[in-house]
Image (cartoon, rainbow, N blue to C red; front, top):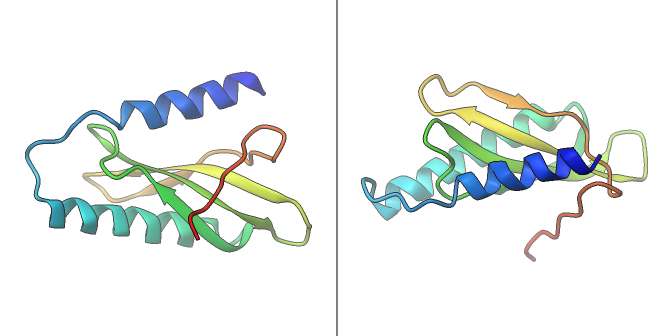
Length: 107
């Protein structure tokens, strides 16, 4: 379980490097796209999923954590989401329960 948290932390930290080539508007649009695609991918597992998006992602991927109430359960779960910047395909990691990862969403 600790290794999953370490991997999640490393993935998010990797995306924090500054990006100089794009405008603020382009990064805002990119972040919005990652959030929408990741939330859509999680709808089968999470009721009303909410994405917390790394504003720049990594060199090749958009990165987010999607969180919300598990469908059919009362527990809060999260998934790490990656979006390929070239192909725009999205993949979700396995379910991370509240014992592994706590996500606080902005109000």
